[in-house]
Image 1 (tube, helix red, strand yellow):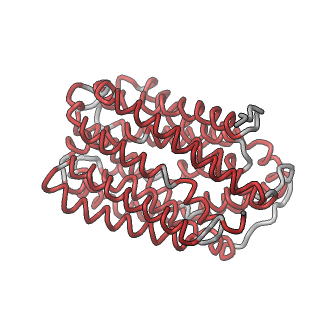
Image 2 (tube, helix red, strand yellow; image 1 turned 60 degrees about the vertical axis):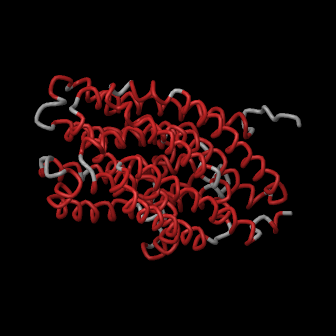
Image 3 (cartoon, rainbow, N blue to C red; image 1 turned 90 degrees about the vertical axis):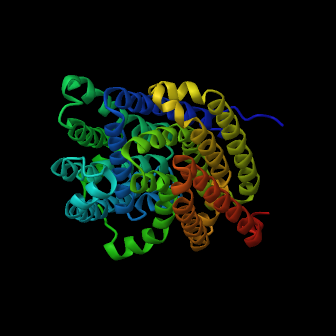
Length: 426
């Protein structure tokens, strides 16, 4: 089979995206290693949990808008920048409103969150302040989704992964002597999200000029919600599938155990960084091909599926071989999570195999079936955690994640063939 090595080919774009993603991986783990080295294990566990919370609540507050942005803008002609700005303007308005609502809820619940997930050890006012990261992190993610939709893939990945890490590393460097004192790390993390959010607009200058130069037509809120909300569960339940184990360990185990598990989970997510690079390359192309060249879609789908499975298998094997060295970088006490990391890596590989199959449910507007599978897998995940964590601790949490990913991927693939989602493209 002849390889297509043009700059816009799937292989070349996937490689460029993977490089961009890998840069983000390195910087994010530089942040995680610094936190683990600078803070006692229980405080490092609190920081990792806080990052999980801000990421998760921000995702819920976006109400599926990033999925809507990618799906609808990727189908538009590349030159239609005015129409692109029209979508972007509407997304900004709704995201800001929903982010403020979720921030108010965060502030009200902060004392209870502190008791449930931080064993009452975090300064409540600092935790409330961290809620502002919901708004600023949403700037980053909305801008990244837009860049992905207009096929500026490398820029999208750099904004999403690299920019927040660089901002946090910069602020840690500036306040190096005060980072570990009096829980200042919470304020520094919150400030880094604000800095990353502001800088993320730099990549959108061409569209922002159009947006501010003329009165952009806006989608009414009810119409926008009607389009975005059905897509929201795809992101929400996918997030909960990834982070439920961390949240459950926070509820059922100590901050020290949360630190061990969170470190292993973050290392297992390295493979998902590569998966995200493939996602950012493949999904917009599938959407464009569905609208403009449907007769090529079936062959492209299977080529993309093999590419995902092949790359993720190699990445997973490489990570498994060096797992103990990676854990050692955080400190000798973190090597105790070696078995947990092995199970999580296998679980992420199994999950990755469902990527392209999931795309087809969204593209064929059969998201309800995908949502049903995600809900089922999430329920299995939570029940498995409740059964296995008390008996096996953090090893039980990893087992639960593996079981849930087997249920999800198996269900997606079986239903994909049962629904014959590629039949119309034969």
